[in-house]
Image (cartoon, rainbow, N blue to C red; front, side):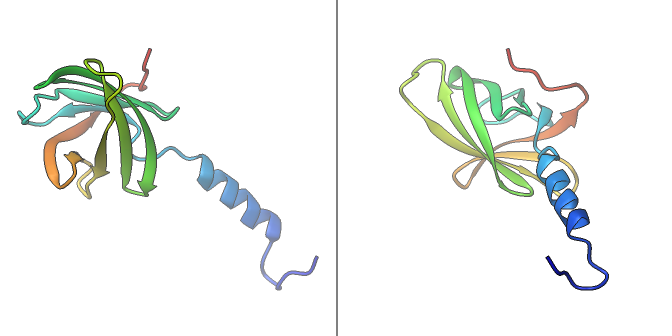
Length: 122
């Protein structure tokens, strides 16, 4: 296999593999920065693609699967504990200041900040 002088195909492949393994910036534990419409106090996006948050309006625990939409946002496909046949979709975006925004459609549900700790959903 021939390659251009000054390029190393093994170095390129290693870089590609390493970038695919880095966690999404949305992964982690997040707490609300202020009161919000659905009274979501925090959310956890685990590294294994699961997510969890609790709302008080409506009162439910939301069990979710998430996937990266782009480098700064994820899509959450969630089922509330009150109706396991219903699925709702949310977007969680990371802003330039490092805060996170949870949206349902175009409606902002809350603004969050990252907190230390390894995300774990049991």
